[in-house]
Length: 301
Ligand SMILES: Nc1ncnc2c1ncn2[C@@H]1O[C@H](COP(=O)(O)OP(=O)(O)OP(=O)(O)O)[C@@H](O)[C@H]1O
Ligand SMILES: Cc1ncc(COP(=O)(O)O)c(N)n1
Image (cartoon, rainbow, N blue to C red; front, side):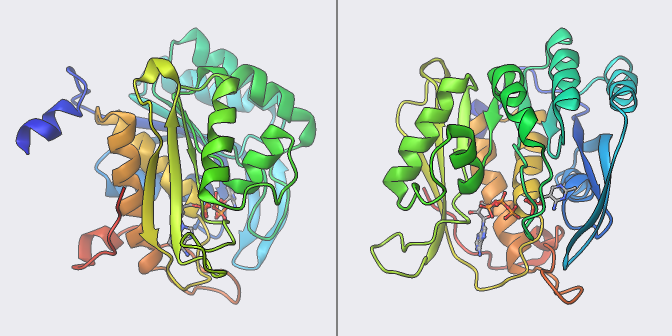
């Protein structure tokens, strides 16, 4: 067991793991930069930030978006990376093509390898957090340098330019995830929170299944299915941000991608299990849940 854990760590893990998250602020505290920092802290990793936008947001939705100038985003990236450095970087809400391009250029110039791209397009209430004009830059400049990309099903459909209801089964998810590898990331984790049909043929979705696939160079030849029971709650604000931030935190600690994805799924499942119904709409995850849930729901492959 000790040996197995050891093998999943890179030979020279960073003794002071740090994650830089490049994302928007969610005033409600459940998603965006706030979810990322809480996740890093819970997983024992030092969190640093580059804000792309400030949102006025609560459990009912996004009320306003105040983008930050691209120079402000660049200045934060340079300030953090050229002094403190980052063992892993995660991106969330990037909003427009100017921000996507400066993020891609700055990370590429600094040879950032442990890069998690959460291609955030919409908030839960349907508000756009990404301008369509930026999709080409995301695909051409950022996805090729990612170690892992973590779209949900609607995001995958938009990136692949296929109809939103094309992905209905796990087999569809595997096929879509493999197609996304063509954009150049080393791994794709396609999240199944939005899968509507049952995974065992029933009409109700009984599980939350995520699909991990790797490019040939990754050495992962067969898809890994990360399954958990579907938790009956509507308080799921921040699930995507939390999962991607947990992967980044675990990569910063030297894990390989399959092991980080597995552990991150466990972390997000516990946080959904203990989600908090703050506000009149969709409540948020409780990031400290992994500390006190004595019997977490099983996560299987
Ligand atoms: N009801 C649920 N029960 C258990 N796990 C869930 C549930 N909903 C989502 N998940 C899990 O949460 C993680 C995020 O998946 P999801 O597809 O919801 O991402 P997302 O769409 O980016 O998030 P959001 O909808 O908040 O934008 C995945 O691991 C998914 O399987
Ligand atoms: C600033 C910001 N970033 C991202 C999301 C998406 O949230 P989720 O994690 O629920 O997909 C959000 N609602 N707000």
